[in-house]
Image 1 (cartoon, one colour):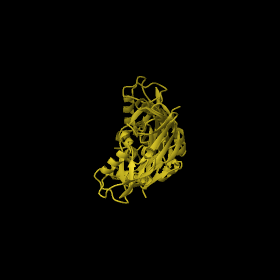
Image 2: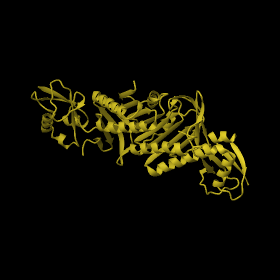
Image 3: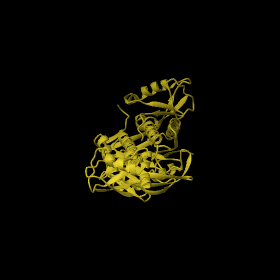
Image 4: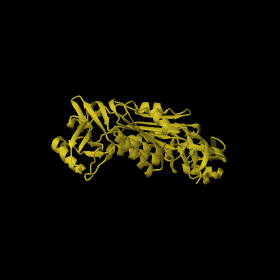
Length: 80
Length: 80
Length: 139
Length: 139
């Protein structure tokens, strides 16, 4: 399946875009996605931390990704 | 010496006036003044507590009162 | 001046309090606003009457501000308090504190209102349908 | 409604925040106002740029308000946050909490800003004379 990942802040700059696409198998997890992303964008490993969100909720490493999920990469937040 | 005592809130109502006068000896203390006040206005003993202030500062029982000091009786405060 | 103390028989102007407290050096501002509640212990409050021993109240508010400056790295402190008759919903007190970092602003603001309620010679009389009570006067 | 959440590219209107939070049931209101400071760790800040993942930011702010309602007896909660470019002295965030008693208002307000800074997907880029930095992005 093809998934899209929204990006903000420093990750938008690392990706060079506010949205990227990746091809993944149907049973892929958040943990698999992190691996793929870090392989393609090694600068992610230099961040203090980052999370992934699925459908506007923070996701856990074992969560499964479904087609049409809204996925976003969340670098360290700094609002307020 | 004659001293004047300013009164506020419930003590103004107990005294029936915002200012009363008392005759005291020259070496009188705050403690002596409390004794006199409670003798003349026994309802003071029903208050949760009260303080006396001399020249805009809270006074201690042993503090001596001088002529022309500005003295005030301070019932429990409830601002804010 | 980094302290502004006011005792006033006029409506407190919250916006001008905030205008005064804001500055390019501050990162966090905490503002406490007291309001006259419509009930005390389940009894309907009609109005409040505030009386102050004015020179001592001003002096005690200045002391509290000075203590807060000693204890926390804060930049500005504002304490405005009403006197006279207030209706339900009106504002008896506004306290505002600015600081480079918010923890100091929160801590100092809370210290100021807590201490003000213990030491500043201001008294309020609550009016209920069945009479008036000087708050905290009796056990 | 007892919760008001706003994410806006326009100047936050503090007075209207206060008008909304005040009510005859409340006795104490705590308001936290963030401001853009002119310096970070001694370096002059020129401006800040706030970016938000808007639907999730709104959802996370609502969650924080719901948590605060569960933990403290508070009456109303307002959280307004800016997006876009802010100059020094401008206001990125206003949080206001009303309660019958002030302790709950103070505790909830502080909880909300502390938690917002940890969980709400909003990012700020600080501009200095020698370049831009996404705050907290790197160790």
